[in-house]
Length: 305
Image (cartoon, rainbow, N blue to C red; front, side, top):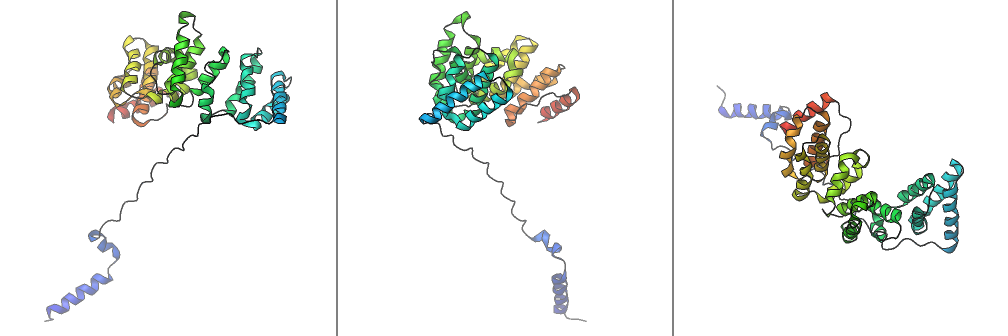
């Protein structure tokens, strides 16, 4: 009979010869990989003055502006546009006044196209100086452009512009009132939500993207309560509009307001409810053109979450 120590030795040798997998059960699991931190949004440097043009460049810019306005061919228009865009945002003080003077609709669209190409989030404070311009088209464009780049720094100027626009009462220019409300909302103020709600009923198809951008700046229970008023009016178009608004400004407390509409048999309402949930829960953009079957399946998933 072999001594006990011999059996232990054989067992130890067998264990050492075993595949590493046999030891996996008694080893600590490897540490889970760390999730990468979300990338921080770069800080926007808000400019305090338009870039300067030297005298010679200014003369060239003025010539190109006239070429842009009076272009007889697409080639001439493209050449003028490219030259102005290359000059950058320094052209804005020269080009913006044209918005209030140009009578040719096609030429005006060319001018606005260049302005939208050379302006962005860094120019909001400069555009705010145009909210009091004597020209209605100039101040309307400046406010609407500003409204596409949320900036709390223009809130005071935007609220004042909205107040001036409201003074017109029934005779107020509808486009100016909308632009002021959009800009005010994007600046974090709820003062213009009634105007945005009115436009959302019939204008969401064309302006929903910019309205959604602005609404993100006021997301919370107060804004959600304003948007939800449209849901109480029993009108199909207003229900869709209210749900569209909630996608942009609804807080978690608004989920219970939205959930019943996931069962609606009207696919427009059901899709709007799905998009509202996407916006409120995940901050995701809307899905367009959902077929009935797809909408039903998505609605079921949202009800289960």
